[in-house]
Image: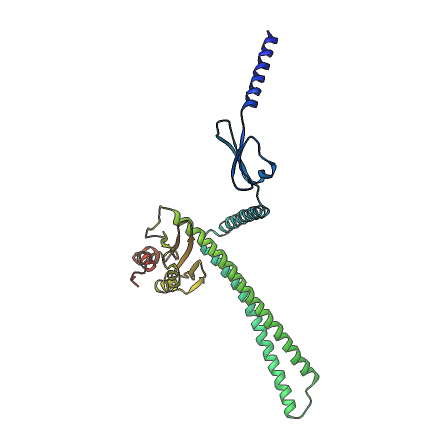
Length: 325
C-alpha cells in the first residue's frame, strides 16, 4: 500500500515538471536598431538594455529593467547617503529638542537662564572696570610726576618709568579681558536666542496644528495668521516690530528670521509679545503666531478687554487692515 502511494506521488511530480517544461517562455526586447523582437531566447548583448518575459499566452509575467549606468549608480548612492545624513540629523535634532523642553518648561525660563548668565558676567566686567579705573588713576599720577620732572629738566626716575610701563601693560590686559567678557556675553545671547527661537517655533507649530484653539481669541490662546506664499509674507514680518511697539511698552529683545520678541515684563504694568514665523511648504503657507506674556499680577493686560483687543488686532495687522492702535 505504501509503495503504491509513493509511486503515485512520483508520477504527480513527474507530470508537474513536464507541464512546467512544456510551458513556453518568450522574451521581448529591442535589437541594435531599436526594433522590438519577440523570441524564446535573448542574446546576451541585449540583456543590459532590459526586456520582458511573456508566457505562452503572450502575457507579461516579469519586467527586467535595463542595467543602470555608472552615473546613475553613483547618483543613487549619493541620494542614499544624503537621506541617511538627513535622518541622522533629524534624530539628533529630535534629541536636542527633547532636552531643550526638558530643561526649560517655558520660554520665560530660557530668558531667565540667559539673563542670569549675562548678569554674572556683567558683575565680572564691573570688577575689571573698577580695577581698570584704579590703574588708570595710578598711571595718570605717575605721568604727572614724569611731566613735572621734564618741565624741571630733571630725569624721570626709573621707578616712575617702570610704574608707567607696568600700568600700561595692566590696562591693555584688562581691556582685553573686558572685551573677551563682552564677546562671551554676545555668544551667550546668540546661543539662547537660537534656543528660544527653536523653542517658540516648535511650540507655535504644535499649537497652530491644534484645532482646539486655532484662530481663537482670548486668554493665553495664541492667534495664528496663515499667509499664502503667493502673498507678500515678508511685508508682514517686516512690519512686525511696529506691531510690537504699538501693543507693548517693552523693547524688542530678540529678532531674527523666525522670532521677534520683546523683553520680559518685570511687573504688572507691562506685557511681553512674541511673534513666530513658521514655514509650511506642504500647505504652501507661512504661519504667523502671536502670543502675549504677562506677570501673575498683570493678568488683566493679557486676559482683559485690552488683551483681547490685542489678539483681535493681530489678524487685522497681518491682513493689512487698519487696527485699533
